[in-house]
Image 1 (tube, rainbow, N blue to C red):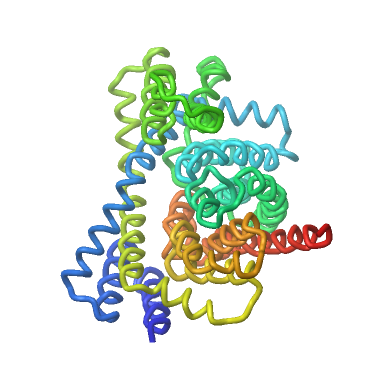
Image 2: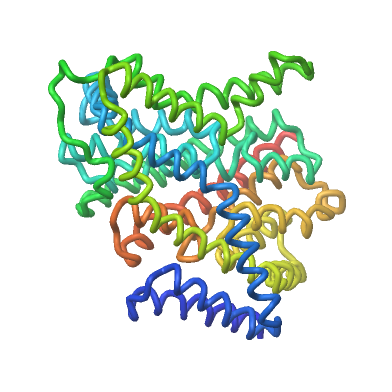
Amino acid sequence: MSFIILLLAIVLLVLLITWAKLNAFISFIIVAVLGGLTYGKGISTVTAALQKGIGDTMGTLLIIIGFGAVLGKLVADSGAAQKISSGLMQAFGKKYLVWALVLTAFIVGIPLFYNVAFFLMVPIVIAISEKYKISAVYLGLPVLTAMSVTHGYLPPHPSPTALVGQYHANMGITLLYGFAIAIPAIIIAGPVFALTLKKYTAKPIATFAAKDLPESELPSMLTSMLTAFLPVILIALATVVKLVTNAQNLLTSIVFGLGDPVIAMTVTVLFALVFLGIKRGKPMQALDKSVSTAVKDVAPILFIIAGAGALKEVLTQCGISTQIATALQTMHVHPLLAAWGISAVIRVCLGSATIAGLTTAGIVAPMIALTGVNPNLMVLATGAGSLMFSHVNDPGFWLFKEYFNLSVKDTIKTWSTMESIVSVVGLAGVFAINYIITLHH
């Protein structure tokens, strides 16, 4: 019965948004309330879950998304995005531009949380798309593929890191196997799949589509690159320091503080205001206009993501993830396939890769001792499953849809398909490595 109620909730959500044309945030709240009540929760419990879901989601994302949008707007208006895009085009040419962007996104995605990386890379993608009249979806989806894979597969991202601990895996070996699986997953779901996406010509969100400026008015390449990737530098530095030393002193405290994603984004926005604005003679009034425009344009997206967070929390409190995992656990399948399958089903139902991964770990961890399966591969199988078929209950789905200005149908054809390819290729890679390991024992 629980599965039927869940399926009906998802169908209702899709119908309200696509057929009834109801605002997505209102649709999320309606479905969350009806879903909670149908599961037998009291109205006060449901509203408390709504508030918690919105609070938890916005608490972690509001500053990052808000400052990410501001940074993207400043980078676009100052000509920094134009400078970077011109540099990439000159270095790699139009033929290899997608590969250059994917490589950049992969490097950026390793140390950065997905949402931070999204708001660093998307303005550059949109600027290149506008300047050279290339489909933004064709350019952008491979970039987001690389960042999605690092988010789901590779430490130091939260879910893979937590899974390494829960499965008692080895961080270094997991990373090594993770790279071996991530590269083909990115290539197939990114540049190869993107060859079918050139027909998607929708104009992306206008905030980052700045007008071309004369070369004399552009900031230097060093300033442009440093501003765009300062969060990467700060967070990566903190990550490296944590790996190489346990020392706790003033210097490490400063490094760790600056490496916190919220602080890194705050520092970067201030840096952009000074070096892309004030130092180049722009009045604060003009800079404030850019900031206000960015915040205004990103507000609808924030509400949609908040609504997705509300629905996710209601479904979680109803115990649906545990019920799904318990039902699947009774099936006699290979532990790696079980980890992937349970994680994939929870992901599709709840929309959160992190919840899918961590819930699965609590269910399948005992299988490692019982079956002797490689724990490092269990981390990667769970991570691959947690990326399966992102759709309307996933905030990442709406980020892509709104920024690239697509319909729900086209977002499913592009974004959801890409995430599914990443997940399936990841599972195939896990079994390939498991086969090689088995041959050598």
